[in-house]
Length: 208
Image 1 (cartoon, rainbow, N blue to C red):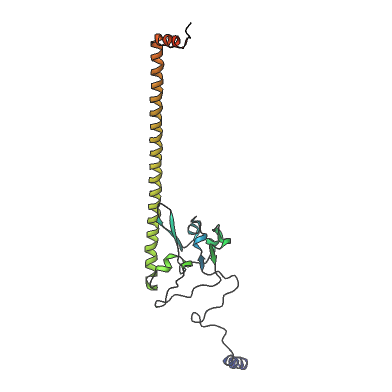
Image 2 (image 1 turned 90 degrees about the vertical axis):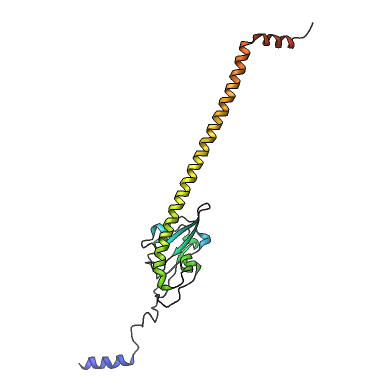
């Protein structure tokens, strides 16, 4: 009892071991897996990061079917910080996808959302924290629709190209058939009119 009493008195005069998280940020250990940051001008839009992400925190929306222009979006509050996207990114060594050693602070309902283009277009466009989840769900549907629309566009483009190639081959075949028919007609006329050959030979023969 005496030892416990003395220990309690000591604790009254020493600093607490715990911290007041989340109001006081917790210190990050070395090589801590934090927020993912993206560099658009280095991206080759291979979609590997989107495909490998377990919770689906990375999405690409196709905004231009003709030029295949895509916009990257990332939800840092859905991310599980597994590093899989960075591992699979072929341009990660150049800084296309980088995982910081810090994370964004927990999001309160009245707090301001972080605005950084390196977090992607979605976070840059969301207005209030309370609408984050619902807007992300809507955004997922929109991205899926854009993918399906782009696939249909590519299929239609491929079909038209195939039809154009078939029409071109058909036209070439018709032209060749006409040329062959004309040549065959000329040969037939020559065979049926031997006098014309004799006259032509006589014209070429020099006069005595």
